[in-house]
Image (cartoon, rainbow, N blue to C red; front, side):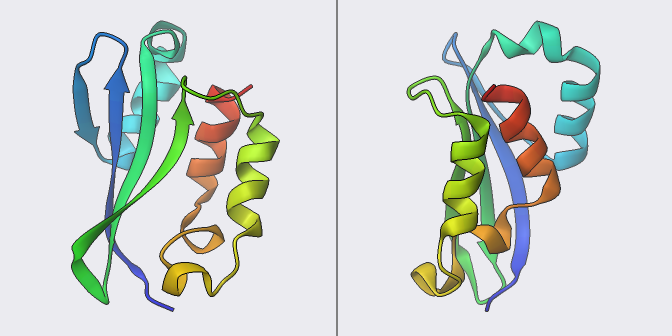
Length: 108
């Protein structure tokens, strides 16, 4: 199994603007301004690179307004992926506690 080399969160807003931020910045934004930003966010995607393939970027969508999933459905989907799924590029191996918290906050 390959390990994550680096990751960032890409935020797409309903006004079509985008930003890419690290986990600490996103945690602060969610902790301090959740009520203000919740209605403005269109999509949250975790982008990461693996140590075994540092040039390849993988993406896990944690929230999108395009579909309505419950938080538990989202989390179960990622947790249910096989450890052999796509050479371990997606799924439970890369879903952090913070990701689960984001999914829960935005998809309920």
